[in-house]
Image (cartoon, rainbow, N blue to C red):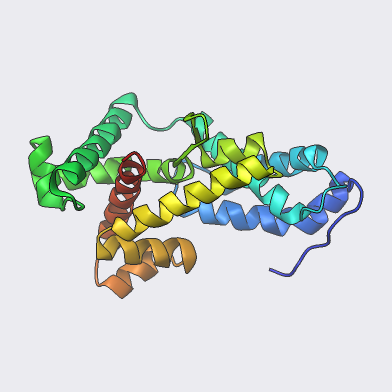
Length: 242
């Protein structure tokens, strides 16, 4: 995507849509790859447009901060808020996800390493097939769970990434320190992932490959890659809580 202009004054809504609608569509397309079929692309785009317009109103044009960087947080944040409000996940499945995350944490502390699927399913008292079916059921939560990875400030209070950026999108020095600490913790957690999950996070979030493309690279089915992605996100959340 080509560089977009840095405004010195508040752009009009028409200017915003002309310049930044491709950015909104880009973020919507990225999220659509990890959401259930019941979510419509146009609905995500509409949510992103509202985030774009809201970001333009909140942006301080006197600050030496790229408008594109600032508004990207607002666009993606608005889409994530829409997905949260949609609330497609029954409470029972949310509880199941928390139970699995707790198992990752307990076994990590017990073994001093990431637990494999057989150990996790045994710890939960279920079969391996049932464990994988649970991953299938909660995999759509990973789109929100990943953006809600915890950030802890100097007072020990915990927030999500998006909450931190929305509260202080221009990142004061204190917020910058909080985010740098979070990035350090996230890097350490990613380094602790099993090799296959480490490769998955690189291919999916950095190389931006689809699940189908990753499946071909890893020699797995697309469904299996989706399971591993859900497991990776739950494991990361557990590691970030250590």
